[in-house]
Image 1 (tube, rainbow, N blue to C red):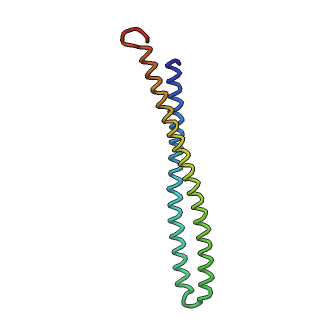
Image 2: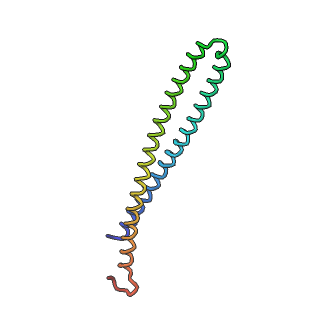
Image 3: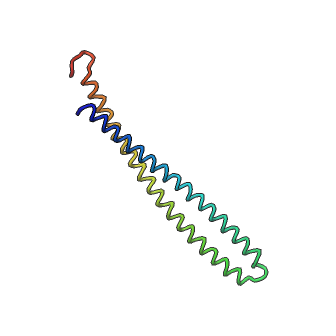
Length: 129
């Protein structure tokens, strides 16, 4: 195989690695955002629970129980959605990392082939082996 074709193949792998790294960065940023949203939702929930406690606990215990149950249900639904999103992001991250590892191994093979071809075409003795 001609050396220029090997170089072209290596450049294609470099471009693909760059695209995968870009996608991987975006996925990691989304994972960071999902963790941030979980923390924000927990803080909102804690504030609502405190407000309900101070507003209803002593004066109207029945209303307090109803409000607490509603708050818990809403909080669990939001967390379930966020956890689902985090799981999707984790799968996407694993898939991209697998693709990146595969391309790295292909690139390594093609680099070795290129080195062998260069060495064969340009031997020091002037004779091609």
